[in-house]
Length: 194
Image 1 (cartoon, one colour):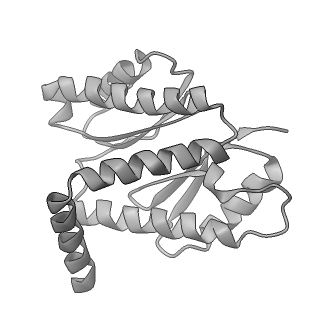
Image 2 (cartoon, helix red, strand yellow):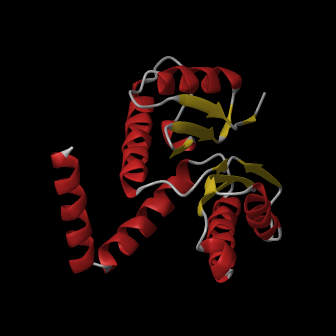
Image 3 (cartoon, one colour):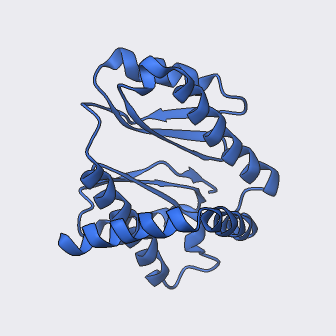
């Protein structure tokens, strides 16, 4: 636990000194991800725009954003809302804002009714996401499978899987994700190609 705290502090310090580096690296990573995706480049860009616009719209509502923790993930116009809201009314208010975002086709509102979780829980979720993403590279024997086509989001130990996949890929990804320590539940939100 002490090592995790030290790594977190070091990461924050490095990004403070080199503020532009994550933007440049993130841009390069996004370009690479778009090339491997089953989405068109235009849809890939639309998904990033949906995430940004929806986040900004929620943040503009200061009363709402001060009471909830929300993560917004878009894949092919399908949006996952994860996080916590203390009441159903606040969760629905956030969903209404996200739904008004241009090019949103469908929303999966997976916000739990609870107070926003701690930084320690969020750090644990980030670690679980990284472990799941890494574990997907060990999937073998499925022609044309590319683990970078799977979007992984973890919230309070629940792992959400998104992407455009074939059913055999979805089954293999789900089984692999179940093996990751800390993953309490796996939720498949895939769009199936078959």
